[in-house]
Length: 562
Image (tube, rainbow, N blue to C red; front, side, top):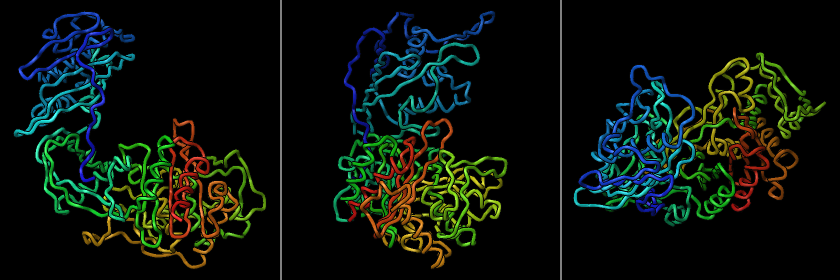
C-alpha cells in the first residue's frame, strides 16, 4: 500500500435546520450563519460559557435538551470563528487542567493543520451526546483537498458551577486524536512505502482491511530508508503518551503524492486472507501465525482495524501461560507429565482462594491430565515451592519474553512477566495477576515448544536493515521439551483443545485459556497451537472459553497452512 489510511467522507448532509439539529457554517472570511433547534441568543453573544454569578445556586440535575444543544452550539461557534481560547472555555478543560492543551489543539486546527472553510453539521442529540460531521478544505502551498469526517461531543455540567459545557477530549476535534497528539499539514515526516507480501503482491487495506496499523508501522520504520520521497499530507503527529503506547503517526489526507519506497514482508497472502476472514466474524478478535523454524510472521489480523492488538495488545493470557509454567515445574522436578499430580477443587495461597472452572477436581490424575483439562489448582499448589522471580526468569531465559527488545520491523509489545510475591505470584502461574501478553507473544511460545529454540518473530527480514534480533539465553533440556510437547499434544487430542484441533494431528499441540477481566461478563478466550512448521495464537476479547472462540480461528489457519 505505501500510504497511511485516509479518512473517508461518510456523510453528505448539507447545512440544514431540522428538528433537533444544529448547522454551523464557517466561510473563509468568517462566520456565515447558524440555526439552533429551540431558539436562543445570537451566536456572537455566546462564544463563551455563562458562569454562575454571585448569589446564584450551582446548577444540578439532568441536562435538558436545550442545555445540551446550547452548549454544543456555543463550543462549535467559537471553534469555527477561530476563537480557540473561547472554545476551550466552553468545555470542562479547566476543571481537568487541560485548558492550555485544549486551546493549543483548537488553535492548531487552522494554524498547523491548515484547515479552512469548515462546516460543522450537528445531528440530533442522544441524551447528552451530539454527533457532528465536519467538511472543510486542507490547503498548503498551493495544494488543496477536501476533508470530511464525523465526530461527536458530550455535554456535562461544569464542576465549579454546574453550567453545561462540552466534555473535553482531543477526539472531539478528530476521532484519531489522543492526549498530546497534534494535527499537522506539511511535508510528510517520512516518505510513503509500498509493502509487499512474501510472493511479491502489494499489501493494501483494500485487500486486507486490518493491516492499516501494520502498514503505518512499516512506513515509520522504513520510510526514510526504502528509497521513497515524501509528499504533502494532513497527519496525526503523536505526542509522548501515544508514543509510549507505541502508536505510529497517522496520515489522514494526502494532498500530493510522494514517491513510495518498497518493503518486502514475510506475510503469506493465502494465510493473511484466511486470517482476515476469520477475525471479521468475531468482535474484538486477533490472531498471529508464525513459522517456528525461523520466526517469520505469516499472518496477522484484527477485527478492530484501528489498533494492532495482535502485536501491541497487553492482556492477561489466562491458562495459555501454563505452557511456560509447566516448563518451569518440570525443570524443577515439581511436576512430570505421567506422574500423579494434585488437582483439588480449591487451593488457598497468599490469602487468596483459587478455584477451578466449576470447582472440578481430578482424583489421582497425572499432571498431563491436569494440563489437558486446565486445572488451575495443579499449578497454584506448587507456588510455595517457587521463588518470586522463577517465572520471570523462565519467560525471559527460555521464551525470550518480557525484555522489551524484540525488533520485528513494526512496533510490538513483547510480553510482561513481572516479579511478584504472595497471591499475585501464584496468580501469574495461571496467566492472571500482572502477566500480560498478546497473540504474537503466545504464538511465539507455541513456536518455541515446537522448534525447541526461541526464534524472535519478524515481519521484515533482519537482513534488510541489519538490525539485531532478540535471543533467549538457554533452551530446555531434551527431557523437559519432550514432556512439554507431550502435554500440548495430549491437550490437542483429548483435552480442552480437542474439538477445535480435530483432524489436524498427529504432529500438533495446543493449549486453551480463559482470562477473567474485571467488569467484563465473559472472559477473554485464548488459544495457541502448532502443527508442522506453523504456530498460531488468537484471542477473542469478552468471548468466553478459548476452545470455543479463539480455537476455531487458530485451527482454521493451521489447516489452511497445509
